[in-house]
Image 1: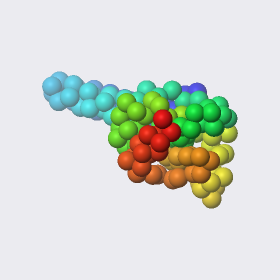
Image 2: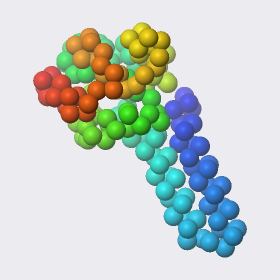
Image 3: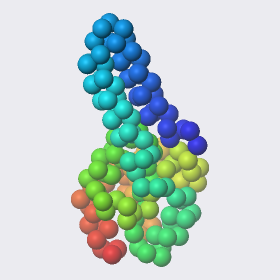
Image 4: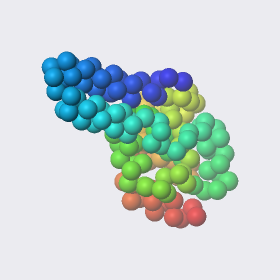
Length: 145
């Protein structure tokens, strides 16, 4: 449960340590800015940025019913973050599976990526696509609507 938050917690911890050092040196202004930047980076890498995840089985069942793609992702993945940001509000229409919190999702990704947990892996009509262009994902989402 805490694994998805490790990277975010690490950013906040590092930012706090450096900010504390700056305050002790008598530089509170830069310390605040530095801490805010690290908190922002932590937020962007947290599970909060992504729509709530479901299990792989549930995502595949829902995708079969409504035709919307399934996105396998993990926190801290810059390519997943890029996909999420470029999709904007439409990202909430996809079925998101966090492979760090769902072992079946991680196994599904490894099965299609030669044993690697390469994300984002987007499954459309049962066919996996590794790190697809966000414009292509938007197009697939439009087709399913």
